[in-house]
Image 1 (cartoon, rainbow, N blue to C red):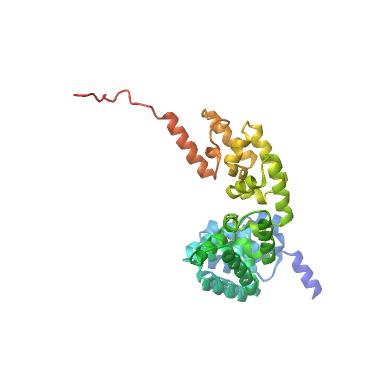
Image 2 (cartoon, rainbow, N blue to C red):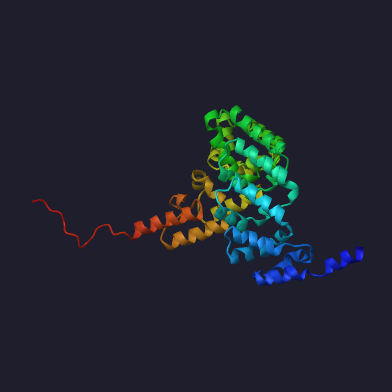
Length: 354
């Protein structure tokens, strides 16, 4: 028996290999990254492909899913059917589910050992009247949250709700607030409720008012659960020293840019240095501290594009540099339009008094 198992580990499952070739799966990539899957018996390659095809997946999507997550073929048809039923209880349609599987195949093809926990957690989040899309995002981005006992998630939710109420949050807005928080950071459930409490105590002791704490809890995108007092203390001390401001002034800056709390001092040092080396002043950074959320590489690239258009960031507002790539392109486009639009139309007839 042991000899047979050893031989199985050494010999590739030819049915799997042939099925992969038929489905145009990048088998060399599979061999390189997850070759052990090709040695497994039994495997359900054709069954996985048939399930995805029945749901509307194209051949290229099926090949992609099996190349990046070949472990999918180890799920038997019964497991896959149960998974589809669980996901369809919160997913609007099969087309959207295929989109999720394409991006997060490991979240869909999971162990059957977790089905009961998944089912219980789905029911719990539905009982909170959370939007189905939020639940789907949680399942896709943080599947571990659904694999663990529902009691652990209930404890974290009750801790968040209690903190929200104690900080003056309105009951009527709690559902929207919770949805936004979970949407921004699906991994919030993987943290300890005690960490959240400790961080809030630290921030309160640092001088933030109740209203300001609620603002941070809402704006930190859940990072307040990923921090700890020691890391925040180092970041605060470094920021205050390099900016040269009072504690009250620093709190005001942090309310505009909570990133100062969770970036380590080494990252902050690099970004301050990068900004100042371009000729940007500290007063400009204080006026637009969210510029610190961008990497030095991104800032330099945007400055080069603006400089080529004649915009001097040393004298202008940093708002044009700020935001996502989409935000910057919009600001850049408006700036370019203002420069190219003529002040008057030389061929237009002049309006004169009769």
